[in-house]
Each structure stands twice: as structure tokens, then as C-alpha cells.
Image 1 (spheres, rainbow over the protein chains, first blue to last red):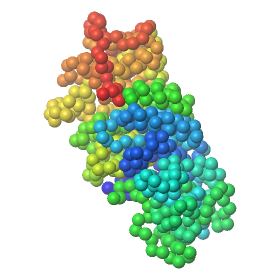
Image 2 (cartoon, each protein chain N blue to C red):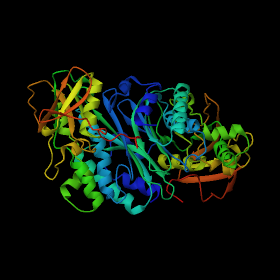
Image 3 (cartoon, chains in turn blue, purple):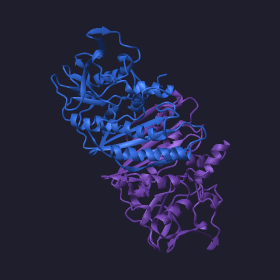
Image 4 (spheres, each protein chain N blue to C red):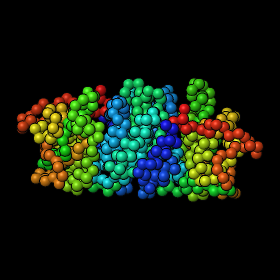
Length: 292
Length: 292
């Protein structure tokens, strides 16, 4: 079963109004924004990634969803699998430091033991408040598509972490993504749609277009790349960026560093251009769970 | 690292006021009650337990924590690991049925893939509202200790599930515990302390006494046992009952089926009697995660 199949089945369950039909990355309840992410050892992080970096990433990926809502961080729940004392201690020290850096406080959680040899599966649920951003489905034909920061850094960083050598700054972008909380807060009241780039710029742009009922064209030459990243197509289909992707009216002037990378038009689907020339859309637009 | 070590370390993290110092099974935020539980294949359920029963149990264990707060069910978040399509479909059908039986609706969640052969790790976060119960630390010397339903059924049911034969009703108590939502709601305004029995009657009674700063004596003859369960000491140290354990003033008349099983006194610790005669306290009072 793919993630898409699962989603279709989940949508047949009794849904809370705050689930918004499971079309968004966050749920709402009262004045709160809820999001949850699970990281699996060997899938979302490497077995030899430092435990403190895994703690950072677990918090940061959740906060990235709150950032896309322009929400303030309130608190977190942690579901933690005990396995070995040194790793556990390093993880908790890392989570402590991450909470002090990024804000928020522990509300509660659950602790379990894992069978010997089982990969770690870590879940964190983050709760924000006072969200001010529109949903991902608000883009209109004529709007422009923007992204904060640079794209593909984490994909390049993953290759560096796997190889055990290479640019440390790119590796840090994979291991320690920085959620764009302040940027999200600044952009929220100004944009027509916003989400974070977790699975890849192209797949997430396609999702925004689909949710908005419009088509999107991404101009590959405009995709902002970090120093050391050269293949824009690879960058635009790599995951784990945790930048903010947003739609804004034509003529929009961004209040935070951001780059215009495309535009929305009537129709449906994703188109790709390089310097204005149509490119074939790659078969794989990004990372999809459950697709092998 | 044991669960107790982990808790001590977690208490040094930035804590939200709604975490109540991590002394309770639930957190509070605004008018909401938050709880989260993780089930691990091979630890909390057996690999050949039916997927629909696992879905039921995942929802029911969380709702049991809401029941202990006298809360109304609001919604749930699900962190689901895709592995094989038939099990996934059966799980979702089971969750659908469980939500329709027990109440609540899906707010959102996350989907991940697991490495081949990895045990399933399932997390559900439940949110309730309008909680009316005191915390587990409210018992006073002189109060009486009570429990709903019968104890040890799930422990006996686990043995039956492992053996592949035996009383189906007891096996169902292990696979499909029924959270005492209505009972919790009725008891909440009347009791001085309440929690659910998840790890064993004795260990949970000891935890209530510790949180309340008093001693507790449990009378083994009074522990209510289901038909087919005969060893009261084994029953009182088996987990997964999901009954409600509560303290109430002397002379309390319970508005729901419940049995008086002990009393609170000045001092600290757990004492055990059989027909009034002191019994040695068993070394193992119940299930503790992280203790092998």
C-alpha cells in the first residue's frame, strides 16, 4: 500500500473537522495547530548519525510544519524507544539543546522498549498556537511560487553523510535542518498558500497546485542552490529541505529572504522549464513513503 | 536506561506547565487533555494478533488515559508504519470500527515505511476535553482504594493468546480492552485520585501512593477476579487491565460497578495483606518498560 492509498483509506474513517479532510500537514483544534512526525532509523536517519542530531531533526521537522502555518511553538509530546543508555542520554541532551534553541517545552509522551536489533522509530507531536497562514490549497492562477533559503542542500548532505566525507555545512543541512519559524510567521499573513518542502520541491509544488486546483510551472534556472550543489533537477527532487514553499500575488515583495521559482496558471499538474524551454517532467518528483 | 532513569532525565528538559512535572499520564493544554501511547510488535502485541485487534487496542489504551481523567473524547493523531497491504487494510478497517464504537475522530498523523523485517511500532495520540478528575496524587490518608471491573483478565488472556487455546472471553480482554470512559466520567467529580491500571494493580497502586505522599495497603482477597482467573497475586501484578483505579473518602458509594481493594494511610510505600495477614511484597509489582 502506498502513502496515497493509505490516505484514501484514512479519509473514509470518521474525520474530525480540524483534520481538514487530511489535505494539509497540520490539524487544528481550538486555537491550536497539531502536527506529528515519525523518524525511522535507516529510512529518515542513518544508524551512525549522532543521536543529538536525530533529536534536533525530530524536533525541527515538526516545527517546520508549524512554521508553514505561521504558528508559535507551544509544546511537544515524545514517543521514545529505549535501546541503549549512551545513545538515549545523547539523544536527550540533544533534545534539551534543541528545545532551548528552537523554543517549546515538553508536554508529555510515552516510553517503550524495542526488541533487540529493531530499528529505532521515534515520534514527536508538536503543538503550536495562533497560526496565521492559509492552507496549501489557496494558490490562485496568476500567483507566483516562492521558496525560502536554498534547495537540495539536505540531499547533497545525505550523500556526504553516507560517504563519510565532504562539505560539513551541507552535511549539517541534512542532519540539522533549521525550521523557518520566524520566516513563516512573517510570511503567513501575506501569502495565498504555504507549506514546507519536506519531500522535494517538485513534488511539494505539485501537491500545492493539486490542492489549489491550478497548474504550476517551476523554472529550474531560478531554483536557489547552495554553494557546492550544481544539479538543479536533482536538488528539486531531493527531500528534507524544510524550506517554506509559498504562493503570492504577482508583484509580491518578500519580507524575508526568498526566491521566486515559478508561477500558477489555470489547469492542473506540474510543468518544468529550463530558461523558459519546456523540460520533460521526471518520473520521480520527490520522496513518497510506501513507494519502493 | 530504565523508564525511571529516562523520566528523571526528561524532567530536566524545558517542561511545559501542562506537563505537570511529568507526574501524570496525561498533559493539559487549554481545555484539552493529551495522551499518547506507542505499541510495539512483539512487546505490546503479538505478531499474529489480528490487525483489527491491534487497532482497537491502540485506540483503547489511549482512551483509557482519557477515561482516568473523566474526559470526553475529541480526536486522535495516528503515526502509522506501512508494511504489508493486507495487514494495513485490516488495521484501518479495525480502527474505523473502533472509532465508531468508542467515539472520536481522526485529526491527522504521519505515515512511514519500515525497513524489511522491522517490528511494527504504532503511535496514537488522543485528545480529550472537559476533564473533571483529580490527578493521581490526590489520595489522602484514610481514603479507600477502589478498582472498576476485574483484574488479571488481560494477563490470563495473553497466556491464552500465546498458547493458541483457552477461554475466548479472556483472550478478548487482552486483545480488546474496553476503556472505562463512561465510568471515568461518572467517577471524576467524586474521587480524590484516579488513574488507569495499565502496568498492574500493585505497581499502579504504589505509584498512586507515591504521587500522593501516603502509604497504601492492598487486600489481596478483595481483588476482583474474572471467572477463570484464580491466582490473585499473579492477577495483581499482570498488566494491560485498563480498569480505573481510584481513591475515595471512607464510606464512598460507587456510582458504577467497582470494588474496594485497599486503603491509604500515613507513611509511604505499598503493603500487601491476604485476609488481613501481612504478605511479603513481591519483587516484581508489575510491568516496567526498560527493565529486563
